[in-house]
Length: 367
Image (cartoon, rainbow, N blue to C red):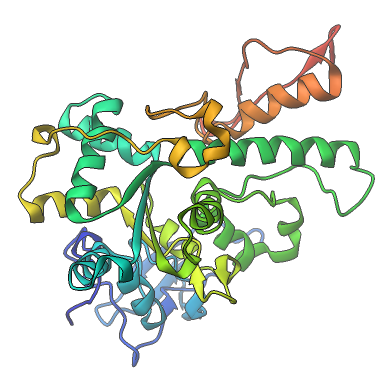
């Protein structure tokens, strides 16, 4: 069956599209019982699963039903409910808007704004052997050649997320006796993690998740509110596209939380991934390294009242595997709560390199 999805989604030769008449299932359901020992799973020719225990016994495994919303639309199954979503969140949809703009008079065009993530910019920089600044400028030139009006850098909006996360942690720490201000605080920037937490653990995890928006959605709010006011247009007249490294960002942009009922528009209308940008370059027959650079649209364009911090260069921040949240929150909390200035954050590895912790010590004691 041919899928209407973006070509960049088809990363393998698997037919992972599930039509409306098919069931959405996990392959198997295994009962976890103490003392059951190690077992092997055998797959029959008809696709059925059997558990083979250590004593040689076999037991057929039943299939476990899941809801349509459980699918993350990544490299696994994509249900029919996600078909419209993925079709709307593709570089083909961006092309449709850009082409439509060419057929109407300038006053009736939708204002196309593209916000590029530092991660996508870095990936393209490596791919084309460019430095980040040149990559940002050449990307700006490419998108404006296609018909985009403005190109921004989401590193700016990430700073908003970091600042809000700092504030929230300090507030929760000071009010931790209140059950509504739960610790620890878990970052909310990854939509895959949020979907997993909501569907799998619910109330056991949700109180601990930060209420701060991700950089993508902060940027969406800035563009559809402050920037729209500056441009003297309503939010629905702006078509806001973000360039992100992860397909799950498409689902984040489509959450009802980020839909303006009054204006009938989303904060982020379309998410294209780094791979889809590369696909656009291929379709246009363009090599990023060969493009003439164009000036970036700095903060003065986005938020003119903050002209003192305006920049025409892509910005960055100290970060890490979590996107910099841990380090920024730790430094701020140490200074705000304990009056301690931290020069270097020292990570202590736990059971593997993916699990690390930092501790704040004062006079030999953990603060």
